[in-house]
Image 1: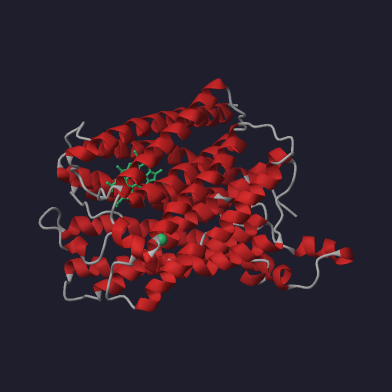
Image 2: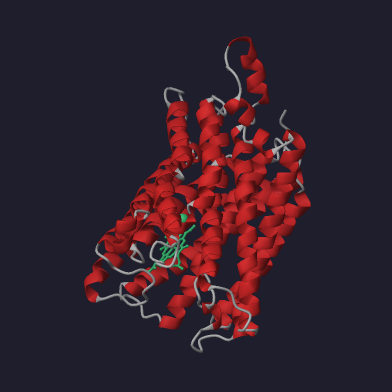
Length: 483
Ligand code: HEM
Ligand SMILES: [Cu+2]
């Protein structure tokens, strides 16, 4: 059934992860500079703060996608025939896009945040010119096109093998007849494995998200030079947040494949697509597409039904997948006699970091709460929890898996520095948010700065942990290249 990944494909995945390790560290350091500047420990100019914030935001979203897509590609290629050239092309487009984005930000002064809210890139108040905005948005567009190509390739390969997307989501099993007795064997054979189910979901949602994102990027770029070419700003915001919500969520839905594929190698129990598992992924395929209005709860001209849908679906959207994954992880690990190396430890942690990050998101997805917490540090608090303690450890666990390293005392120290630092850091965001400290403020008032200082210290600890792990991974890669 399963083919082995080609040598070229494997090497490309390793390069993806190496790029991710280095860029992640750089961007975390940008984050620390911002946090410490809010704490008053460092005097960044406002211009530089917002440039760092833009680079950190768009860069982290991009790197999260690089981590996710390389995990998905690595495992999906064991079941379907993917095109290595397209995967390589995506990395090249990514790197070119990054150079454009960084030049526009640090040489051209662009600081419009990763959400590039239309039509604000044109209205910079003199901070940057239209050509620099175009350079930045063009870089983002290039990166989006690269990812779109990879997802189209995955979709094509999945269709070729499974015949239809619903087959690949496991609908024949989900809605089929009884699954016991003499048919059990046939059902098991025909049911797509978790990796295929997750990849299919991501293929569907990310193609839609990326097309929406690319469209609004092109519109915004044209609008930079031809202001009379304009669309409704509210429509633009809908397109951006549809893309943004789907794209950042998809990073986790890709990275979680590492949990499904790697944990079983340690527990000796293969992760099967049960009916609840299939139901959860199919449900979330739809939910992740229609939940984005929770980013527009304070946009009063929005149709009320959309906002209500955003609130209600927020409660439901990610929960089924989280539950099947978290309960699954517990069940597979329970009494399995698992030997805890770095890879399974990080992946296990990641499952619960992801779950923990969803809770404050659900709280904030409630309209009455949102009117208090909107645009406070609560929001970075929730997404840093599921990204820093969910997505990042999935990627780090995958790195240990790639270099086949179980871990020594140093790795263990790095692991704990990362967890304690990460939890402390995200906690200071949430607590500041609960005290109504606004997000995206370069300057904080003195009463907020104690929390900012504490947050900076925890952040430094987390960065130290990731740095040790990154050195370990890059060292392992170099050693295997020499061998
Ligand atoms: C130690 C690690 C990190 C530190 C110190 C850090 C710090 C920060 C700070 C200070 C902000 C601005 C908060 C504000 O609104 O005032 C921020 C925003 C953000 N961070 Fe991080 N961060 C870290 C890791 C991450 C990771 C791992 C990701 C994603 C994978 C991430 C994604 C983002 C995003 C998307 C924003 C929003 C930018 C915006 O508002 O436009 N960060 N971070
Ligand atoms: Cu969202």
